Length: 480
Ligand code: CS2
Image 1 (spheres, rainbow, N blue to C red):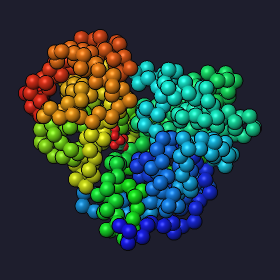
Image 2: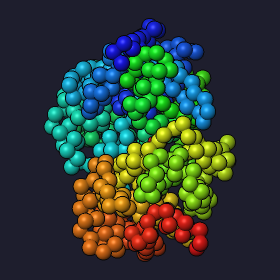
Image 3: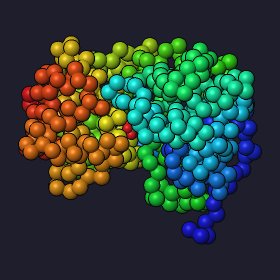
Image 4: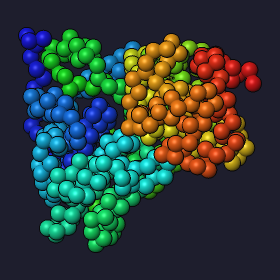
């Protein structure tokens, strides 16, 4: 390794116009690439200051190579690499909160974009409200100049811009949450209202929060990936990222003063409302991803492509789409849902993308409501079946119980991991365990959790998983 030169910047830095919070693999494989392509073709000062809200890893990887990194697109049998140079600086918020606020207050910054994952919004997944008892929110109300949460940084930076007479920036959420812009607005305005009601009103009136639908499958980078870049490219790049060729970005075109990169030249769609696209993607893709992640993990599969290469799981997936998910989705203009799902299956099958079931299984308490529970509620209301969804939810319940089908410990990563484990452990019988988990109101809306048309199939799927395991349970579904 010591003999291999490190990747170095070859192109000049672009002046920053965006602060991005959450520079993980998805940002590097997605909006950073769209932005680089837009700037290459249309120009503009749209360099990105990348801000990590927690760990210094992104900075430690990127700084020594002046922000550049390699993005590798992996098709089933071909690959293609590009060096991305759109990042102009990387900051680590806990090390220097003032530097982050100063960057966000600079009027040259016209967009603050976010890939902070569901939990970064500090909200209650079952209700969509800001959690005022969240430790970071309590901290940020008391320590405005050194916040911890994304909403805390946004509120303080907007407050200072307002005080200085600057125009606000656009807040661009790129997380997998329905109406992510509306949610971001609700959270930011709720936090601002705790600090200064006039500021809250100004944010309501002046700041834009467009919603977006984002899509590109991007597994976490592994040591083997880094080695592959070293071998293929002849340089060492610990910041490299691997992604599928497919990408789709649908954005509501509501930016403060119309200021945004020409992302359309790189294929982004600007629309007046993103809701139908978001519902299609969250339910058809993320809903089945989570289902395959929990049941596939329990059945012993390491990746999504391995899971769907099992014919029984492929059948289960087809049934989940056809009978339970697609009937709840209104096709967005220009989309045909059966072609959309057929293309999704091909994307899942891509053997070059090693997307671990364990990775997708993370943070299930934050993902379940928008991925699966809304579908279950609508299907019940419309008297349609929910047996495949009930099995997926029961799979999540087993997973968060923390023990796999061979009695091995599962490394459950979830902000509610302890509460989930405690709820599961407190039950003696399988039925009690499932009932305890159903009573967690942070995840399950009370109306759904108390409805026998939901409870009964979920509890019975849980018992079935306990009796015969995930593989036999998904096969059993076809016999019914
Ligand atoms: C996945 C998503 O990890 C997960 O929860 O479902 O990251 C998924 O790969 C992306 O949303 C695809 O666009």
